[in-house]
Length: 301
Ligand SMILES: Nc1nc2c(ncn2[C@@H]2O[C@H](COP(=O)(O)OP(=O)(O)OP(=O)(O)O)[C@@H](O)[C@H]2O)c(=O)[nH]1
Ligand SMILES: [Mg+2]
Ligand SMILES: [Zn+2]
Image 1: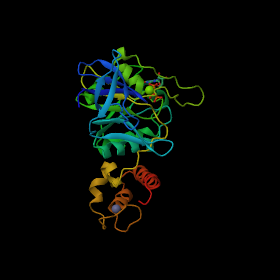
Image 2: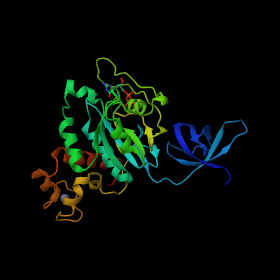
Image 3: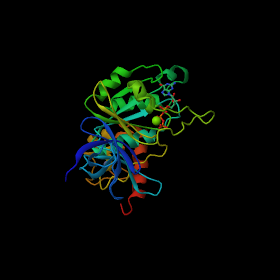
Image 4: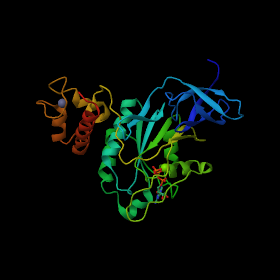
């Protein structure tokens, strides 16, 4: 096929922005309804007669995709070809630890590394870390890099930049934790819209509506994604859910039964590790909740 190769820098439904080989952004329409390019996709596109406009005609094979089920239960792809999932949390809005665990599991399943960023560190003095205190210590113990940033006070940005070098990373997490603000702090010229927390409810407004990729001068690509309150990974096929919980890998090898589901089987080394405090009980509860969710998404499992 003739045409040029490019990367999708943003997708707005049936329109995408493709970054061409020179780094210029070309607004493109999409050839055929079946083709659904997402941010991070490598695509083949052709120039249209109208100057500066293009047509995406092919999506090259994806290394991986970050998916979630949409409201109708269909799989919605947030972005493709990701090497690192950066889960952002904050003291406000009230943290959802199960959501963080689900994103960390999704990262493992897509073969991407993961890191946790506590943003709004400027608020910690005032509000304390609350339930995040223990959770962040736990994530660090498991082996995830845990970084503290304040996009507002411009603190902790250098270690974050270092974490992003050489990676295609995506910022994910609840609406209002400050994903777009972090991008603005790293890349002031991007001038991305951010949302004020609405008075009273403490919930963030959904301000970011489309995933968009930016290049950092310090190295690495970073994708801003719309925050979701109800993210659940799309069904992980036949995959073994324990792979999504890195600290389960070692004990899982010692279960009495090779096909142990780690729910109520006798001789389960994971249940034993939870009893002995070697696996965090909260993480085990997340595992069981995710197991139940997957069972609903995956009939016949
Ligand atoms: N105090 C404080 N506020 C912050 C910080 N970072 C972001 N905020 C505020 O938090 C609110 C939400 O920030 P956004 O960057 O829009 O959050 P988001 O995660 O992109 O939200 P969605 O696009 O809805 O997913 C805004 O009012 C920001 O000003 C921070 O480090 N400290
Ligand atoms: Mg945003
Ligand atoms: Zn077991």
